[in-house]
Length: 75
Image (cartoon, rainbow, N blue to C red):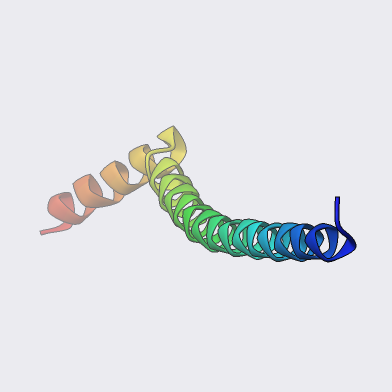
């Protein structure tokens, strides 16, 4: 094999590998951004569920019901 052919093939190999590495980095960045959006959505859903479960606790529910009944009795 001629030296110039080997240099040409090695140059092509380096260029292809560089393109593949850049592609993998871009895909990783895109995945991280999408996972960040999913994590924010999960945090919002968890906060909503916590607020809902706090409102539906028996003590809060019966307390609100008792206040409503006492308000109607006072009228």
